[in-house]
Image (tube, rainbow, N blue to C red; front, side, top):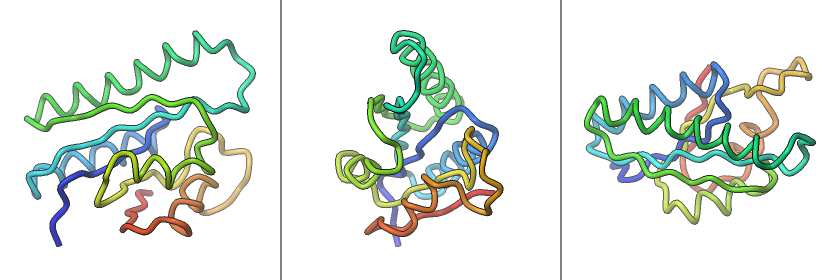
Length: 132
């Protein structure tokens, strides 16, 4: 199986960072490009400007990691519901593979898989690699 576009949703968490690193390594192996996605959660109460700035910084970090290894990184910054919108984002990105962290920044529930990762695994039509 060949992966041309590897999508990595990221929220800036440690788990997302691990997923970013693995996605970039896979992109090197398969000569793929990365689509880094950050969704500004519409349920958060912080100012939109602050959340947008943070999202751009998170995506810029992925961009820098990819450039350092010669990988093309495309960025998508959206406002919405990360769990609910993930399949639409996958389709928009035209991804062949999703690499996602098992847990994001919201670790309020002591569960094995975060809600966004779980919804992505359950509903995605393409392979999903969950990184612990």
